[in-house]
Length: 424
Image (cartoon, one colour):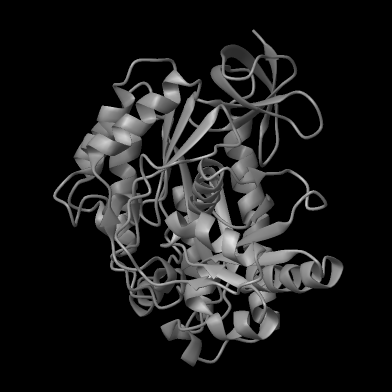
């Protein structure tokens, strides 16, 4: 039996696919790189945004049309969020919910034999120190917790991932140690909200970061997305952990809007003043910090004045990475009961922010031209050469290097998304 796994969405979902592949391989089921070779196709879905939902739905339909003789198993967030649509587009497909990955081999085997098997629902099963088939020897993803403490009105992912479930620091460190010994040079600590880690278990994210970073070896640690409200009372300790020389000078701190009114209506649980206070403390201690933010354009209650406040926020905070999303209703989300703002207004605001985004990020990157940077080479470039990351997690094109090594480069050119370099 041969299985092909297709993954959509975030780093966390990629790790889920690695776990499914690991469970299958442990049960002597082959993972293949080509659909043509496969007997069964697993589609690991993402449902965070409407364009992604449409892409996933279209893909499932097309796979059934193009490969009528192959069995299809659907996994990921769609299973828990929208079973009605899944039943409609794939009545003959099996399902594996994101909390049921340990049953992957059973679901796949029974599906291969002609059964329609559907495993969903929440569990407290750990996703650390479990079978995992990593497809990248340089980067190792560790899910430190699942679920969140938030109640954001626009989000449907929380319905799929459930309440917070943190995994023990001891287990996370053990997995990181093994990965580093096996050649990993970048450890990615991921979650729906890494800042929520330990709120249910009594452990601390800052302690986790330090324990992983203190392991022997030449590697870097990337800390995933942190909800601002969950680091308000622990800022200094997290900053101290991120200052560790083996941790990237990088934070992903979603803000969503520059308007306190909209943030309140989104139930984000923080204000712009609190956000800027967090950011100020980080930048004072880590001058080379790279800030990544998320912005939702056109939330149903966003006025022109609210939008202007978001523009002002971006011009003040000057984030190096900006993830823009046009608001769209999501199944089950509270804000979906509100009327959407006119499409033309949303399109105009999004275009305006996109232009600001390019200007800010290119200006930030241009300041690095002529500087010398220590770069960790983590992947091959799609158009040749290699891609590395600076200590501040900024991508750099390196012409010639060896994967998993650190090289010293001189930055020669900057764009809004990456840097170009020559070996120093």
